[in-house]
Length: 550
Image (cartoon, one colour):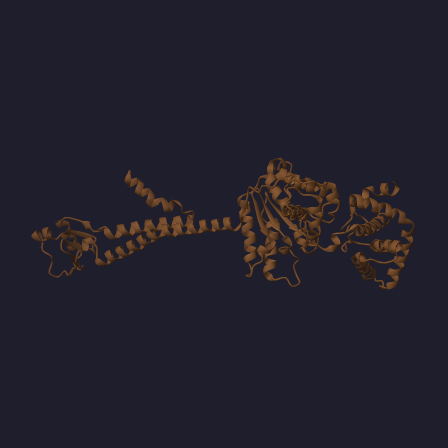
């Protein structure tokens, strides 16, 4: 039993050898050693009687007889006989030369030295091989542990969709992804494959990271987080290696989710002043998401607020198949967010009233607002939050963003009129849009599409509409029209370059006058729309006809 156990311990390292070529080489080496050992130690001479030996030397009288301490050898060592017994009966011819050798029957000293050298060499190989195998396995284990530590896996994130308010439409978009991760076979049987990537687009603080965490929690799959800037390395190839290792790690735990926050830092458009390192890293990401090898059951979620700077190859289908735009919460969404934030706090607040005074606040800003209000109440030795706490800290929170995003009542009326005129003009001029918010742009001109001259002119008129309505009502221009006026000038130059027309200020002035004449009889309609916009903070294109004729 002890012997078998020792034998098992001795052969254990070799059982771990996975390289077939190495096993064959070791087997051949051992076989060669055994054969060589047999040849060295074995005596190949044939032992014969003295009579037969005398006959052999008589048959070949010119040969050299070899002797050692015990034997005579004839025919170059082919035959041998006992020396002492032979000399008692026979006499060696005087003409036959005799060569004296020592211990010929036991092998020469050189053979023994060669045997010792080969034995030592094989012993050294077998002594070091298990150690080298253990070292290799230790290095592989260390590399595996390094990967585990480099990319931390988050399983218990503690965030559910029910914990996030104000993003109901986003939740619906992600339900299919969740169901696929939970029940992949149901979709695969129908030939439906998981989206390779989901891109969350929206301004800071709207909850992109929290939505990604909730997605992982709902699907109950491993979640790997990395920021886009973490892939920026000094040495060329280091960033690409990190991308490859991240995906390799995620595949090992598939189905899984990779979340890359601020992905625009990694996925900016190639060319220009981009470095080789950044381009190599981006190329590796493109390959991992939709390369030659399949990458099933690993969903990549990216979050950005600058989609316009990202590389087109990263935005195409089979990479980021699904894009989800997350805007600042509207009135009702702010109300639901406030209800969620205040459910475990004592307060005497009217949710709708607070939501109305927080126009332009993101979900993160509302969370900060409630926290600062609670601190303010504590400072005044109160146990519940009241409206005065909100009003005291609101400006401090709001001015962390751009001032135009936080408006007093007069400014809100100006913005509502401005946006209403643009929405009205876009509706009658057949410029596509989904909804017109109180804050934010809703008209986007795509330079890559084919446009007619009249279509470009209509876009220019829409961009001029806000300026015109305020000038009609208040007899002056306002700074909020700056960006739209710049867009109108750009489109005037774009129209000239694309249609080979000479850009002139007169052409822009003509369009301004035409739109002025159009809006003069529409002042009442604009005012009516602005009231509705102030109440619900957006105007939907599908309901605009009813609103205008209601």
